[in-house]
Image (cartoon, rainbow over all chains, first blue to last red; front, side, top):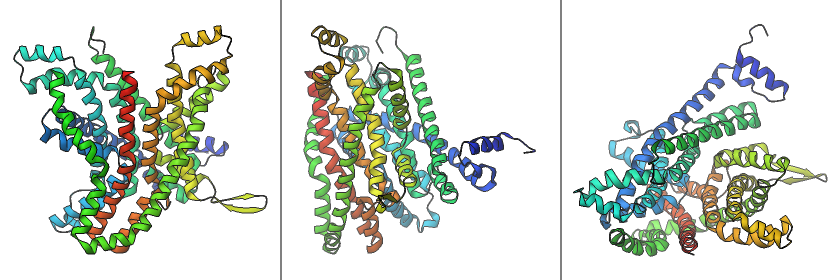
Length: 248
Length: 260
């Protein structure tokens, strides 16, 4: 009790409530747990731009009107939306990763880490969700507006780039935010292939300490907080980007 | 203009929509015919994989039933005039709607005991029931929001009209409001059911014997790369054939309700 730093104070106070957070005072387990939080945040921060980038590209392909572009993307979107993310991840990690390893001559040379596969699988899965939302937005752009743009000499790509996508992104923003929230939740599947995100780190701690309830409270609070922040960010962007008089 | 540009997309999508129902199983069958040794190996493992998939269906069905009952109650509680009823439901929904399915499955698996003592008897508490509870909690939080949204989407004038006709609040809910809500909330409810069906694969991570677990067992037993590939293709095919018709139906219902 001589040094009352915040950590030991917290452990002491929660201990009186009957909650066991004693592992925070040890070096090793507390370190694993802190790294788990950072890995999850890192994973989320990388996967969000990946999903948005591919979401826009998929939506552009779906609405391009060229069947050699839209058919493969449509097939991919339907496949990824209707199969579990975990199965896609295991398939990618066990099959595609092995194929890559064989190509480069042994797993030692394989540059692709489990982390990469989580980003790729979750990113593309959520990109498929975004694509459907943005496609709806692109199709909702009034035909008269596209005709006006064509009349002003815009090419097909310029219409997409300067007219359809800016408006589609605004109208599909609520659906995109929902997609991002499911992205945050989906990053937990990384624990199946030993990416040390927060769920994996928590399992490491509670198998030693038997304090599942305590860690679960923190986990639920952590995910609620991230999703709350993303939802707030979404409404902020929505207000920031609103086009006056367009009703968006 | 938009009608013309969307024409080719919808026609190519039209063919694809029908292929979608059979494409994945067909791929598995054709591949096993091309390579008969692989096909023979797969046929040997099919009963084992099927027993796994049966577990997925049982978990899905139980979790969705549990989630629907709890979710409708929680959704109505969120609309109660008394804050003592409204607040606990709102907090429950906020916490569990944001929770990853995997975290909830881990929570229920590790928190509940592996057997229950009732009347001096030791009853086993199997892992799959814990997974049902975990997914049921998630489903109930989603369905509570759907119920709340559906009730709020009914114009207030209808409540006033029922009051004028002498209905009590509960009678109005039972005879006027809820029948309309069922129609409106059917498509999002089916989305939840489909995402719970896909979530059942997460139960493999806590050792429930379901399809994903069965496929991993099979591929470690056979130790052939092409068998591993086809085993996971079978897993994808099974989930796809379960969820794809559901999502098609959802989209059709959505379009019909939007039009009508």
